[in-house]
Length: 155
Image (tube, rainbow, N blue to C red; front, side, top):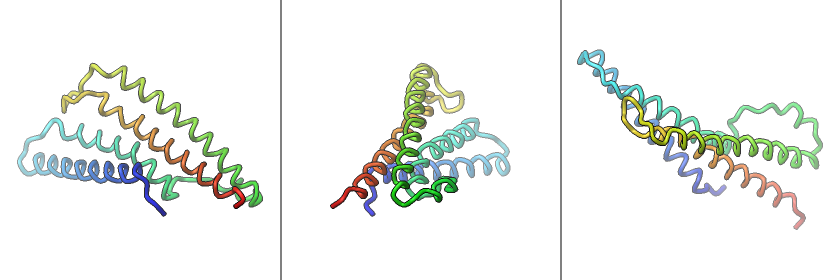
């Protein structure tokens, strides 16, 4: 199976944010308990890395089939109707992510002039995880629908 660029990008973001989160949390633990002082920005950095990991990681769990699913109804459908039902589910899921994309862009616009308290970075950079994650999901859902449609076409 060919790995697409949006999957590689997602993996890179997950790896980088995970490493930053672990290193910053470990630094905070060492500073707080061994050196007896606290860095005020480390908790915020770890929290924002977690946000990015969740929203960008959604696409990886979808690609790997690790999202929680309830197949009770799908198991009852015939082999011929199953691709149609899966396409309907993917289209409904795409609708959700279109709403999240739109809402994420609005949230970024609302917070464009604000900065975070600990790091001093623009808040829209933190909230950008939502529309970026939604866009990555829409790309993958579109590709799934296309692959399913192509597979069902007679050759």
